[in-house]
Image (cartoon, rainbow, N blue to C red; front, side):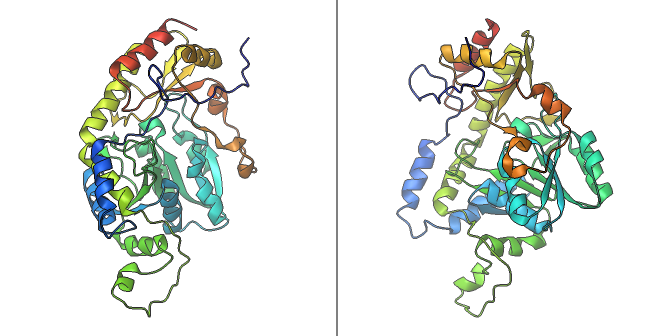
Length: 381
């Protein structure tokens, strides 16, 4: 008898186990970190600036960028720079990591949750449109799993309301929408370099801004409100006019990021190959709906592989019997006590809440591993 309320323990990394996540830390990254530890710079230094420039040129059309200690830091900065204040409303995804929405609580703003699209698990633009009020200050969207949201529709809504869009692209490094790379579309885009993302800096994030005039303010807020460049020129008369934070990235993390950029094509190709194995193998399986496949107007970044399964718990136990880890990863945010008062009517989320499941996808997996997962699912549960 399977107890649907029981939780399977995290699997160990050992021969024969296919774990849900694993960091991508290459020999090159280890070499770069070892070298960096011999230099003068282990905090924020020249490597951070190099990483900012190279990342932006590769993914974000050269827009202004600022590297920080976490994607959450980047989102908090984005909300501040967008002018979100206490009492404002921000339309936000119901289904996301809480890191998307918790920084709004720092500010005293109210997340107004939008329901999901059943076929993508991204926010539903039709629901977003109905949520706009005169208190709405911004829209924040998440590209779930690495599949870009319907950005044309969201921008139409935002432009009509005169508000910015902030993209949480934590899942979406390398994704594109109608030929434009994620990071070059909206006023603000956040990327994550948390441990198990496409590129990791141990933990870290990047905020990309279309408006380059915001960069000096972003740099000040990142570092206690201090004009760091003037400080390094030994000009000590600088005033602090803004409340700042200790949100900077370190050079140790930045060189890991630089290694990830050098190896990007191989990382991207491997992840997309695994995703393709899943998509081809699961598209016609009874009781399974594959999420995020089949789109020709946008490129999936292949961070998560998610399915909607009938009797998800039984499937999860079947996978575990074959030493395959799976999980939900993200949860609807309105279930958390900190978001009490942000409730609403979310029929699409209600319909899949007990059915979605994330399958393993990372660079420690082989194509044979993905084929094994597919084979186990196809055998039934």
